[in-house]
Image (cartoon, helix red, strand yellow):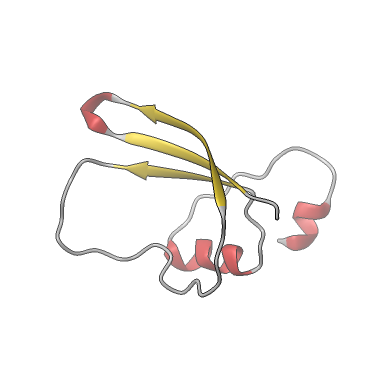
Length: 80
């Protein structure tokens, strides 16, 4: 994935589950996060960043609301 990211060209969009996304976060390969928040309380669930042990600072780029109360939060990785 790192080789692909370093190549010239367009952005790479990746969709995946917690294990796949966590592996990309650990390798510092994600520049932008789009988090979908649904207005439902389950009481239980899988933490999406459970295996991440180091701090990642993000800047909020936008928050867009949709019908039914869903919100998409767009963050970019903060470069320190």
